[in-house]
Amino acid sequence: MAATDPAADLEVTPEQVVAHEARLRPRVGLIALAGAIFTVLANVVQNTTLADGPKVTEIDALREAAGEPIGRTGLASAQALYLNDHAAGLLLSIVLQSLVYVGLGLVLLQLLRMTLDRGGRVARPTRYLVYIGATLASVGGLARIIGLLTNASDFAASKDQGTQAAHDVTTSGGLLVGGTLVGQLGIFAMAAAIVLVALAAMRVGLLTRFVGVLGAIVGVLQILGPLSQASFIVTAFWLAMIGALMLGRWPSGMPPAWAAGAAVPWPSQQEIREQREHARGGRGGGGGTANGTPATVTGPVSDGPSPSTAARKKRKRRG
Image 1 (spheres, one colour):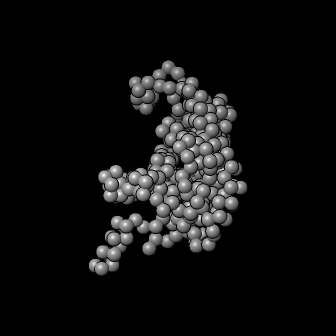
Image 2: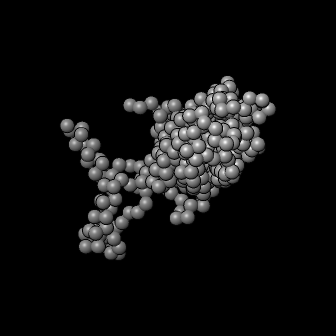
Image 3: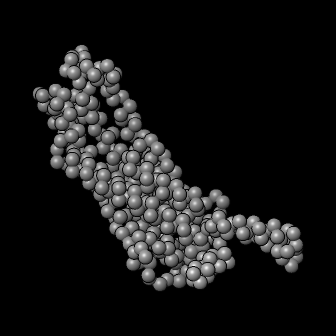
């Protein structure tokens, strides 16, 4: 059996769960919405800052690689000088992204707590992955950009602005290299934490199937880079939806698990088929209620096993 978070063994009543969450959910919802906004702002600032960056044609790049003069400063040198001239914008985008990681960590921790209070089961290291991911991703990102901009500043003040010195701007220095490594480790930890928490919350009925699966996609996309085009859009969208759920503003109505304080899992495909068959039987007169209304069930089912599930378990025990 897979290890689970030890906090899941603490006994709390559904009423205590709902009362506790009523005080925390508004704050967590606002943090999630702020994270969505900061994610968009970080991407906009970064793209705006780099929009006028030096570019080179493929022919010029080949000529430069071959050591031939291209009639102007080499591409790497021009890029290093551009980084120095636009340090403020680059630093601001990373600061915003670091704040996103901190906020995302807080949201994941609360969503994890809510999942465990409803009897959800997650891998034991999940909580530590959130702590490690949020801390290392934010600190590593800041260290990397500070190291990069320090190198760019030293390059701009140096008499040697050749191609090799320019390449060293983006590849050398303990702060730059260490920050890059730490940041990558944090991103991988955060990616795993997002996937685990989103799927666990979906299984107890806190997140709809769409939001739960999208959360898993968000985790995977983090590996591509938090400010990549696909990653930032999906991450911002997902955080906005989590914020709406935390604030009780889900357009189609809140999933029952939020108000129940207990797990209300979504029906499986087999249970959905059984509900449809039951509804058809009701319309035919065999499964209706006393007033002739078809006996149908919609939305999440209770966390007890369905008749088909119980039957399967009995057959397994007999085998």
